[in-house]
Length: 166
Image 1 (cartoon, rainbow, N blue to C red):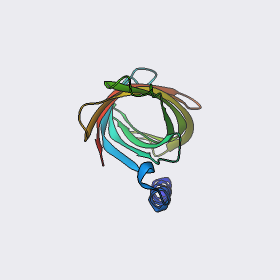
Image 2: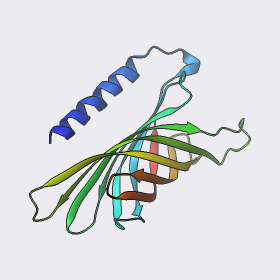
Image 3: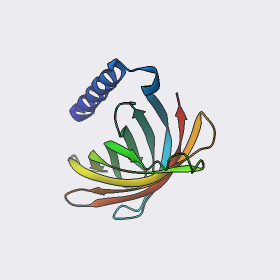
Image 4: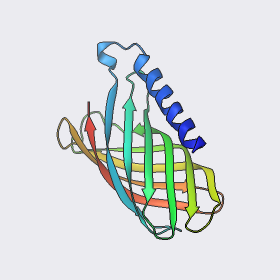
C-alpha cells in the first residue's frame, strides 16, 4: 500500500512538472491516454489489462510513458507499474500509416499469492518496441512487445491498445 501511495505521488509530481514547463507554440505538449490489453507469453502466461499514458514535450527527443497492468491469472494477484522513455522513429513524413518506436524504463511489480500472507514487490528493467497507427487525429491504436527483467521471473508481454490524444 505504501508503494502505491508513493508511486501515485511521484506520478502526480511528474505530471505537475511536465505541465508546468513553459513551451512555445511549435513545441506543444502532447498527451495521449487509453486502455491496453494483451497476453504475457513468458513465465506467467496470462492475459493482462491496464492503462497507458504518453506525454510528449516538444523540446524533448523522447516521449514519457507511464503504464499500469493487472495480470488476470488464477491463484495470484500480479500487477506492474512502469515508467518508460519512448523514441519515435520518424521518416520525414513519408510514412503516414504508422510510426514505429522503441523504449526503455523501470517497473515496479507486485505479486500476492492467494492464501499466502506474504506479498513480493520487485523492481525491473523494461525494453519495448511497437508501432502507433494513424487512425484519426484523436484516436491512435498501437501494438507493442515488452520485455521486463525481474529477479526471479521475466515478463514477455504482447499487446495493444487505443490512445486518445489531446
